Length: 69
Image (cartoon, rainbow, N blue to C red):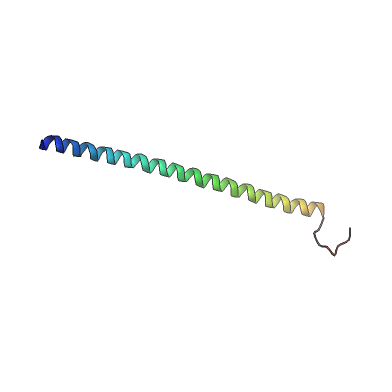
């Protein structure tokens, strides 16, 4: 019975170690995907801001209510 318990304990340790590595890999890949998505959204928002500013400069319009067009 001691050998069976030791074998069971060893198997549980292997499963826990391997499962832990798998869980860490899944979490790091999920975090990488989240960071990449956030970076993509931030880059798109920055491009929109720059595009809007260039549009306003090239168009030459103003939101100033004192300016008569």
